[in-house]
Image 1 (cartoon, helix red, strand yellow):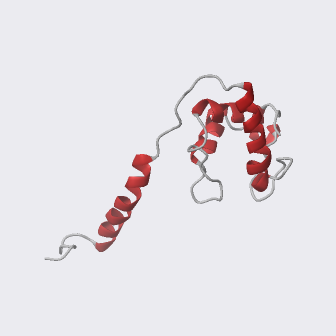
Image 2 (cartoon, helix red, strand yellow):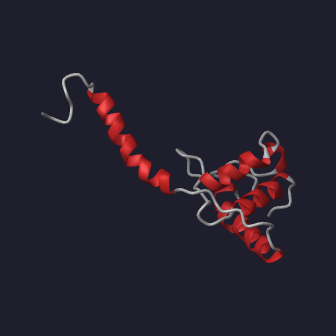
Length: 121
């Protein structure tokens, strides 16, 4: 008997196989650990990260480029939490990468809040 029985449509089997391929990376993608307040030294490093890494797509002044503007006015429609989730997990199907492996949750929230307040770069 083959992988696909006479009763199972092939598109369902293909969808199940795709899901099985996607599950291992999703299972290992843990949210950043909460480690408390962001130190002033780490804030300086995060400013550098935003200026150089985020700026490479969002423009050196964060006014837009490959990615959208990260200035306060365009970000008003998003909560700090929504922005932190985008920073952490990226935007699938777009060039926006996940920064979660490099940032803690408080750091992602700090960046999001600083962007909304116009304190970066």
